[in-house]
View 1 (cartoon, rainbow, N blue to C red):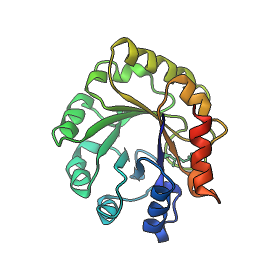
View 2: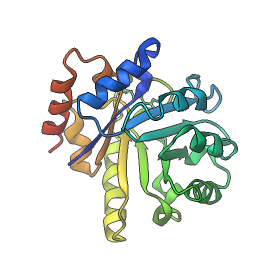
View 3: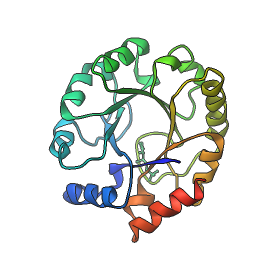
View 4: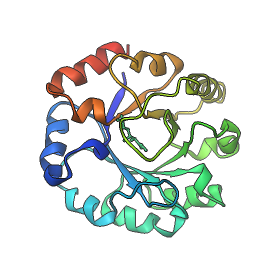
Length: 217
Ligand SMILES: O=C(CO)[C@@H](O)[C@H](O)COP(=O)(O)O
């Protein structure tokens, strides 16, 4: 069974709360919140005040994906804003192990994201400390990009690493995932699916969510 995490990057920001309600009613599992700083990625999005404005208004857990440099400086702010999962990029952390421990000290879930060109060796020695690994299936920064198929092998190798070590870690994928290609990532071993444009541009949200779940089997 997959978990579906709509990426609010593709939501209508002028009606953000209503869009969050819609994805909750359609049966999604997590709210994927894309935080971008204009440095680590070219785009700028939102920060803790927007996240805290949604807290308590939805039952969906907040899955906060930090596409920012020096994320260790802001972990406390995002925890206070209501993050349930914080994901940092391996490429953005000088002391990745320390940053993961910093997140876990708040008793929330810790995740690490890897860009398409980053090897799994970047997380080899911290894998046992993680609740989730995010394999980026596009280069981070923008919604609506095309899925990069070379990431499928990376998902397969990661699934093998997790299973061999008998760890309980989610594999999340993010970027260019639609109902018609979701099987590629779930067959490879992913179980948490981020989808932005496919969800928020859908004219029949419930049907799209069902299609994701059916095709992911
Ligand atoms: O983090 C990102 C992009 O950096 C993603 O969360 C995208 O927002 C996913 O959007 P789609 O590719 O599904 O439209």
